[in-house]
Image (cartoon, rainbow, N blue to C red):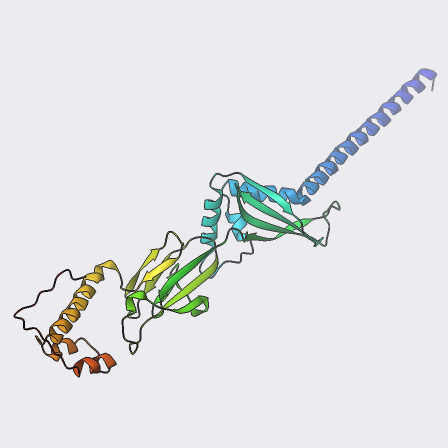
Length: 306
């Protein structure tokens, strides 16, 4: 082999080595970039703030199903997930949504508060996982999303003791009674031997929304419910809905007129006795009373009856 051929052979070998080296270098760079990309993605996925950013974006965009379905909800027995969804929609309602970290003593937890405008809406708890991520980063996952205690409302309902009270069509049990034995002013002059209803005060805490309050009387008739705008409490009106008031007004008027005629000796006791329970003390007292009218009269009139 002469010198020219030898040089040509060396040059060809150099090109092969160069191409191989360059190819390996490019492959190493591509592989390194691939590892770096995946490492950065792994890091992004484990940063706690990014989990909160995802939740706040879902709130802003009304993508609430993920929050609701993946949340360990502690709802009141009178509310459902639909009520929780309505609460979030009303709370956000195009307001600015932001989060802030809350100081906790547990090193395994990170807790964040989410606010919509000035209202604190949610509290998010992130728990550090035992296993680290693929690239060795500390990994957190959402452990619990709960409604802020500052956001929860309550319903206070004043109702007759013999009425059934419902919140969102669910019966309010006696365990929610906070106060009992309160008297109706309207029944102050009814004799004590009558089984008079009293007022009981129900209080249901931990509500997200105002809810709907309804009530029925002891005979199953619908009762009126009025919200006191000053106190925010609900009052169950014992006399029933407005369309029944005419019937009761007529009955009360007839009793009053019959009694008035009886004490003036214009009608017999039977006219007033038919309205009164014969086993009651008032029946016995009226039936045995001696009526003396000292002024003679030829007629009677009733005016301004209320």
